[in-house]
Image (cartoon, rainbow, N blue to C red; front, side):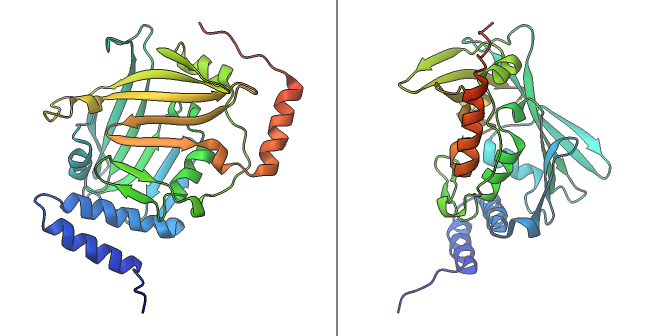
Length: 271
């Protein structure tokens, strides 16, 4: 008879494996959080009125787990009610990793409760320019049942659980207005890739993980309609890659594309 590996079996098997390794309890808690994604609305909530934030209804991960997973310290820590807030600030830099003038940065806020467990993850408005709220929420929901690559620090979305949405893709002119001149532009057949470097404001980096402080952000634009179609980068050790086209409902995307072509709005030039 075939053996069915249930959600519980997956956790038990991984727990046995990880407990046999030194210092891997944080991976068990990370995996428990991953399993919660299977029932997203039961364990998480999205707040997008004043800012885009992910709320953890049954928090598992401790603040120290984030340091263990990323090997990086937050930019700042401050008291917040009975808990605390960690802020990770990423500053735009040039090819020599020097901060550009005028300064440009985005941030993540991690709020922890009185048990020191993650309660809320807030994304800055600038980050939402390259990861629009509707697409960010859809990508988070699609991680349920995704493929885990511990070695590469990646969690790949499950194609069968991808949520289809109707939304406007960001235009290149709007993105460039917010992010400014890229460090590099790579030309391809039907698209071009704009590359930006952001450096995490951090301290006491664990030896051997210094490269994790640098975020290389790759933004892919369609040459035909100048839409942002893919965003990829590594942020505090977390690798993110989102192909926005996978989340668009076919009819909605065709309609949006037709409207864009009809308007024939030319993108602003690089400054």
